[in-house]
Structures are given as C-alpha cells and as structure tokens.
Image 1 (tube, helix red, strand yellow):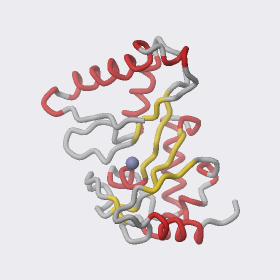
Image 2: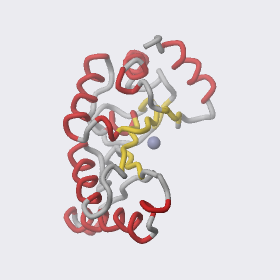
Image 3: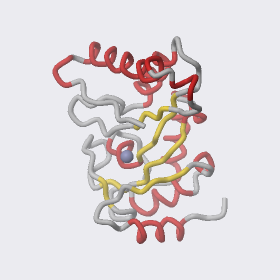
Length: 182
Ligand SMILES: [Zn+2]
C-alpha cells in the first residue's frame, strides 16, 4: 500500500505522469504480477498542499492509467476515513456515508475498495489537514462511525485503527459497541 506523494514543484501534469510511471514500474520491473498474487492499494489522502490522490476521480484515473499494459484488477484502494473527510467526503451521518460510497462506486467501483483505515478527524470537514483523532472525539463523531461500521458495502473489509495515543483497545470497544449485526 502506498500514499501517492506530493507534486511539489514539478507541476500537476508532470507529477501525475511520474506517479503513473512509478506505479507501473512496481509491477513490471519486479514481475510482481507473475510471481505473486498481490494487489497494490492506493490510499486516499487529505490533499494538503500539493499532495495527490485526494479525490475519487484522480484515484480512478491513476488506476486506469497504471493498469494499461499490465493485468487488470491489480490495484485496489484503501479508504482512510480521516483523510477522506478532510478531503471533502462527508461521513457524519448515515445519509452522507451512503452518498460517499455511492460516489466511490460510481467513480472508482466499489470492488476496488479493499481496506479501511478507521480514524476520526481532528481537523474540519474539507479542511485538507491530515490529523487523526480517537473514534468519537473528532469531527466525524460517533454518529458518523455508527454509519460507517454498519454500511453494508464495508461489511467484509478489514478496518485498521491509526488513532493517536495508543488507545486502540478503547477505540475497538467503542466500534464494537456501535456495530450492529448486519
Ligand atoms: Zn491511513
């Protein structure tokens, strides 16, 4: 799995081309697709500064371009809740969670979604600032996570906590409490 890096001074067009070349190299140079049954996951970012990969359209485009010339379905997506929220995908209630994953499905395809990084966000909606918070203490909030853990399209995915201050156990208890048997 990888973040997509920053365009910095390269300029958007050149940076995107370099990124796709780099992603292709991973598969072609190492013959990965023939040797191993693995996928590469691209993680959605919060999009601070010139950081790439903060929206579904861009990620879909990177997947499409990278897969040209290599096998299909080698690339998946890791959905980090804090990054997506800071990048402008609302997750604060059932309706907005449904809309976010409807959009994901329309633009990227829900079958590409392979992993969830489960973090509340210290920073505001659409702020493009990447700050993780413990579940229920941030701007996504408990109502948002209740919708996330009960979203049917996420039911069979692994969730990984990346919350601050070593509170994984506590966060896990909160998530289990709000998860219904879906
Ligand atoms: Zn993450």
